[in-house]
Amino acid sequence: MNLLAIIGGTGLGSLKNLEITRHQVVNTPFGEPSGPLSFGTLGGCEVVFFARHGYSHRIPPHEINYRANMWALKEVGVIQIISVAAVGGITPRMGPAVLAVPDQIIDYTHGRAHTYFEGELESVTHIDFTHPYSEVVRRALMSSAREAGVAIEDGGTYGCTQGPRLETIAEIRRMERDGCDLVGMTGMPEAALARELGLEYAHLAVIANWAAGKNGDEEISMGEIDRTLREGMRKVRSILQHLLAHRTDSTPIA
Ligand code: HPA
Image 1 (spheres, rainbow, N blue to C red):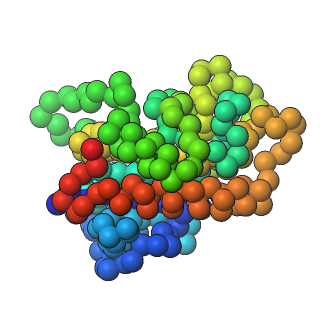
Image 2 (image 1 turned 30 degrees about the vertical axis):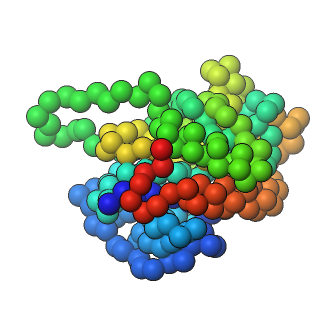
């Protein structure tokens, strides 16, 4: 199986145009994933979908069982993953409703189960993470966006915070000094676990709001985030539709 998985984040709890054929509960050595996996067809191509926060959006970023989620995808034959996530924008090109395909990560999370390589190991393993995202999946996202006529930012550094609270102005200033363009709460350890399992993984980030302090002194409004995400997710669906039109069930995107 050469399955493609789409992980839906905040604002993408389901894929409207996914024709679901079955659900599968997968048990893993690391516990339960966020929910059953949904198998279905999108643009005529078989895909697996699941909602990172659970189908009723009840699991906060720091309590997601990332290890179980990625393990379950590998178990059912997934080889490539598009991870959709809502983020805050830090640098000027990353304003609300912009879409981006980041190419770097800084991890500010703590206390999350972040590796499969622990416990009774035969040897210590260090994965290469120089380029944290799959360039093949990134390119496919960029060219599908172009075809769909959706403007998208190529590259950028995703800073992953612990959440569930949003950041302070000083925290965002520090992240900007570090070189972060985007801030989110779920990109790690998801991306690193995908690499540990040998899965090709890329992020499709939807900017929901200006990060703290990037819109003057104004506080971040959840109502505005929801409205911006609705617009952003329409663009995401269009990109995915174009991307899958190029794929058959047996060929990975290349
Ligand atoms: N910070 C962190 N995560 C987010 C934000 C933010 O401003 N917006 C959407 N997800």
